[in-house]
Image (cartoon, rainbow, N blue to C red; front, top):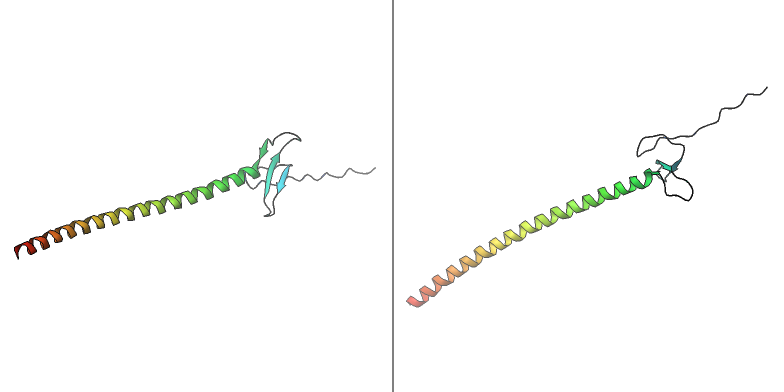
Length: 106
């Protein structure tokens, strides 16, 4: 009598959530993700889209934070320039007044 061979069950570990699942998706970067879905229905669990959405959000946050710091630095530079212009203007007006008084005395 022949023995029944063991059936191979492939259940790799998900790179996003860490669970083992028989239904999975592999990417070109050799990452494996869980994907539990029935035909004609939206997926119940889809780690690949969650992974890419999280990755996009991190990149957006980094961009926003870098833009925010650039705007903040730019704003401080503008304030410093305004202060310099105001002090230069005040000193210029004072010097013009002194010059006017000097010329009136002659």
